Image (cartoon, rainbow, N blue to C red):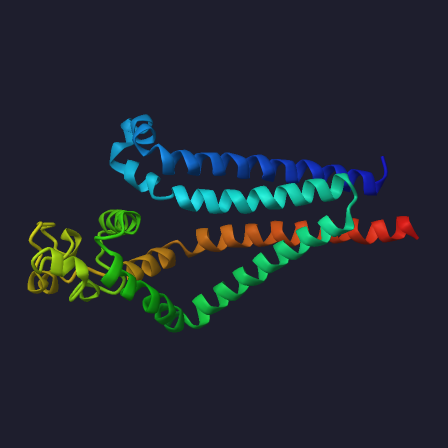
Length: 241
């Protein structure tokens, strides 16, 4: 077996695994999003964490769809020896890799800038959609309950919001340490519950080695995938010539 044939076989098998993994994630995400009751029933022994799993349904669908596309492009490109598919596969991974590097640079070097960008989206959304959009509200409720945090910055994200107006001046229970249904702004101020963004940043700092290791591993896989796809692409040029 020649080097080209071996690399081609490995690429096909590797992308087949990515395709199957994406298909599994996609199916899981659709199941979670469509049939939540049945999914939670299956997770009854872990009912305290059940709702948290439900909220990752859309995330699973998005990641699964991307993996499905990449696996299909890589597998078909290598098997059919298609330069177009291999180049598309390479381009998508390159775009993802550049986006990840850019996000990491912004997060590390310009954390305050990143916070400003996220806050510009999160605060208006909390003011307008929290309490009215079921999915958005469920995601934030679970996040605030699990992380014991309040809003993006703190309780002030809900002051003057549609939720506060509709609930007679009350804020989400997570904004007060007592978790009472009548959590008033002055009680939330006294409780001084931390914002979710600061909590997430502190959690990431506590697990820097794990996060860095996972990021490095993903980066290495992406670079290897790009290198191999470009090797096949260039080798096809030699075969044609």
